[in-house]
Image (cartoon, rainbow, N blue to C red):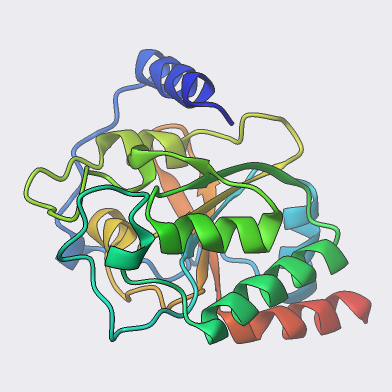
Length: 216
């Protein structure tokens, strides 16, 4: 998805509805909403039909590194990057997505090296966007998640596909509440027009179980 297309989608969303101010994260929970929750074979079937967003936190990283000295998103040597385990996890998740025949549509990533690499290893491509980060650089002082909420409240750009986002755990916690996403974990989100519902959460180790449930 190009920068223009992302911008156009958000502009349309802004015209169609006004995103309400979110309640404080402490009063909300990003656990699956009982009114919309899916699991096992039912979840796989729903995902194959498209219409959802899978919001991934990047896979495992090297916490001996940090982003303190970075001045630009392309300075990978000055950022916290994926570990070899994180790269293995990203490839494994991508393989499960292919085995389950899930219809991957747009792939949007935070511009950081670890999030771009996660998207590329999972899906072979990733379009950078600060919308899914919520702010520029490493400081959250001027964080504004309005556009992210609008994006998640809207359906994928192409009917019958899934929107894949590879980004960070903090923006999701800020708009949806705890519990925090683990590295590599995905929240499956159903767009509701003015908001979204958490349908499921899929950890790295859960994909094999989904495949097993689907084969029964």
